[in-house]
Image (cartoon, rainbow, N blue to C red; front, side, top):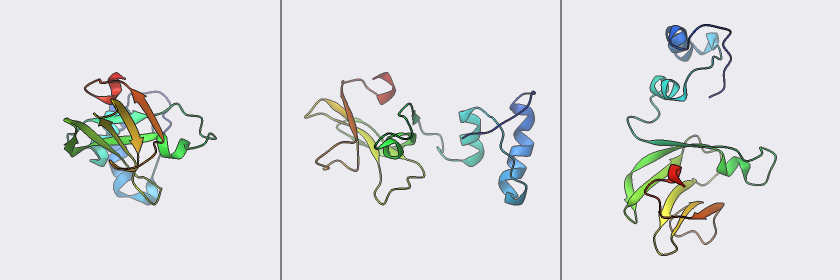
Length: 129
């Protein structure tokens, strides 16, 4: 969530941010902590989230990889599954652990043949990779 604020604290802007969300014609971009923005937008609903970033936006698959992923209610191979928020692709993108291969995968689904990215690591959650 990109935004710009000149001086002041993000908390001071909460009322204006909330007003701009409810009144799109008065939308103003502001820099606020991601947690606060997600609370205002009610994206995570108390669930964990992963912000995947760092891939050059002009690089292949950058739109598939970069973005906010929110924890789903179901697990896969006894570990959390994360679905990309506001996915612009025709198919969804997920982060999940594949126990048989011992990898965290970013791909379109549990049965997908290929990965957009993967890492061989058995961490309990993807942000520990």
